[in-house]
Amino acid sequence: MKKIIGKPLETNNKLIALIEKLKINNFYLENNKDFRDRILEDIDIKDEVLDIGKAMRDKHEKIICKNIETLDVNDFGSYPDIVCDICSEVTELENKYDKIICIAILEHVYDPFKAVSNLKKMLKENGKIYGYVPYLFYYHAPSDLKFQDYFRFSKDALAYLFKDFNYVELYPVRGRISSSFNMMFAGRWKKYMEKTNINIYLDKLSNNEKNLKQCSGFNFIVKK
Image 1 (spheres, helix red, strand yellow):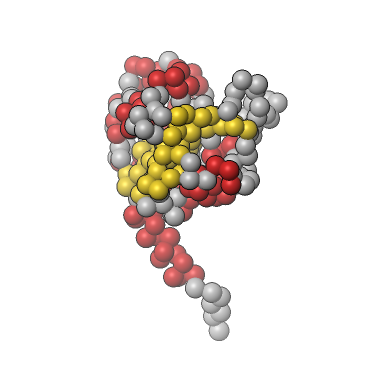
Image 2: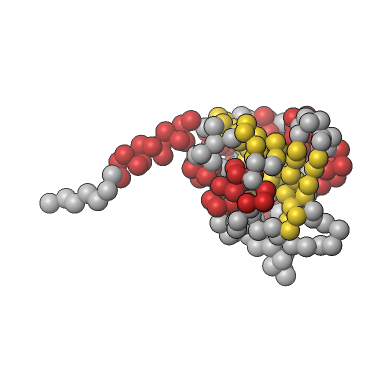
């Protein structure tokens, strides 16, 4: 006699519903634009902002807001403002930020589910997180393991990771073909070839569904 433990079908149906609720935007598949510019446009002068890992890079200084702080798990002296493991307790930072920037961070934390839960706690009501996570992407931890490279995220994984947020929008980055070239040639593909927009033309050889399922990674915007 067949034995059924728990409610596997019910659980699977709930997971399917989460995935189907995702909003997918192909803007960055079809355009060589910098997601950081979108973030700059969205930040209000009244906002309290956290830039984790100073991921805005050269655009960090262009952020105009009430207050901006940086956070890192490592202490580099003058940077960051806050030294913190976002997988641990963050009581002092709860309900503090209107916007959190978390670009290329979650693959480097050992517990992304705890990290995302903490980021949600750190947001004010209706606050937003802007970020990027890799999917089909090469290993990129430094040789000294000052930080590590743990995870990759499909759209299904992100649907579950952000299940407690009210709004989730994903922006696939690179499609099936250009993701493969980016894997093979590491940073050289982005640094040189993508400046010609060849990735945009190559990815048009695949349909949207294939590009979504086999992309390099996802920019994302989630709202509390």
